[in-house]
Length: 303
Ligand code: A3P
View (cartoon, protein in one colour):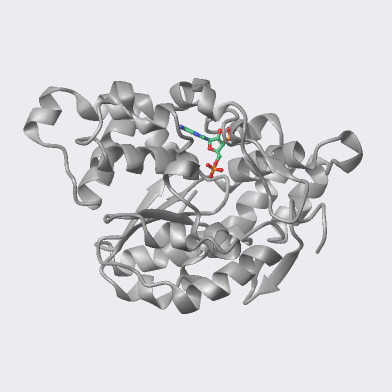
């Protein structure tokens, strides 16, 4: 499928997953070549589920003893510069960037669990997955697509986008298989996969920041607890703080072999739960909820 179904590169169906052509090539290379280290940390998500936030939280948690918060790299680097997307680096021939990251490496991917390189599944590395109410993912993805497509002549209407999404026809779709793949594996191996929900983290960020720190092997010490370090990290990584940093306002990168520019600002829109209520009719919300409920049936997972 060409635009507007895909934002930048045409989407290809590979093993029942819609993947942008360019990223599919990177994925296949990655599956053959990538060697995971036992200390690696992989941040995984369906696009628009809170990846940027998870990157900021994980990066600042891991580096907290090396840099003071007032000179923190997140003040001068976008979270995506701190934590690279593996399929992007592999599809643009820059996999060396990943090889030279000192351990413990933090990397991210939107690949579904079953497409991860075996080396990741088999090593004792950790995976953190963040998921979000698909209705809000849909709204967020629609805005993101609009910004990238540009002028009104290229717009895809919300109703059109809703139909594509329900058919699973968006990048890395369908979303239900993506969430279920990580969910099932996290039930089987909770020591390997931490399964976080965007809405829960939004409600109790300190609790989940502590859980994250513990899971990635750097829990907060009693001294840090006394100095409220976790609260400072949560504040640094909050939507309102990050979105106002100059580094997150513009710039961005031009996608290879296209004229499409993805601004860093596109990753910060509203940062709330439940924005779908302002965009979907009741019928639309019920249709998507029913679809997801059917897909999740028997898994123990609920929106
Ligand atoms: P909205 O479009 O609903 O605002 P991703 O990082 O996976 O691309 O997801 C982007 C979504 O996460 C956007 O959602 C964005 O605003 C939100 N987001 C980005 N940074 C965030 C933060 N620090 N806290 C909460 N939400 C954040």
